[in-house]
Image 1 (spheres, one colour):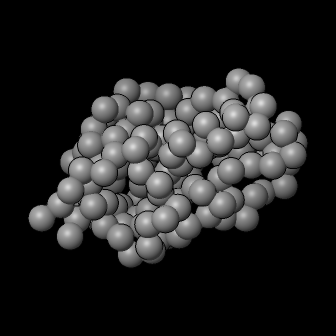
Image 2: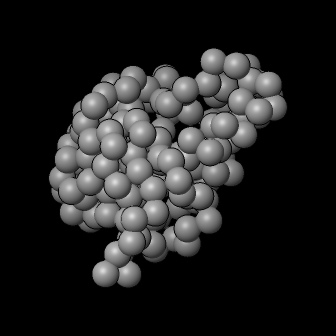
Amino acid sequence: MSKVIGKVISINTSKEKGVIKEAVQEGFFQEDHGLVGDAHAGKWHRQVSLLAQESIDKMTKIGIEGLCSGKFAENITTEGILLHELPVGTILKIGETLQEVSQIGKECHTGCAIKVQVGQCIMPKEGIFTKVLKSGIVKVGDSIEIEE
C-alpha cells in the first residue's frame, strides 16, 4: 500500500560536480548507482539528491532572484512534499524506481555558488539524499509515493 504525496517537477543532471545541473525530461536511475550520467552517482549513500520547490520558494521569498530547478545541484526537484521531514529509511516510489531516504541535509561545500551569491543555501538543511533500490525511469510529472 502506498499513497501519493507529491510529484516530480524537474530532473537535473551534470557531468561534473560543483556546477549547476541542467534540466532533462527524464532520467534512468540505476539500482545502487543513481542517475545514470550524473557526476554524483556511484556506489555510496548519496546517490540521488532531492529538493522541494517549496524550499526553493523560501529562498525566493527572502529576495533571492533567478532561482530555478537544478540551481542547488539537486537531481530531482519535487512539489507537494516536505522532504526534510521524512525519516531516514523512508521508501519512496518515484516513477518506476524505489528509493530509500539515506540522509537529510549535508555540509555545504566551500565555494557553493548559491552560498557565495546569497550568503546561505537551503540544501544543507532541507535537501535529502536517497539510494536507488529498484532501477527505472523517472519523468517530469511522475508521482512520488511513500511505500507503507
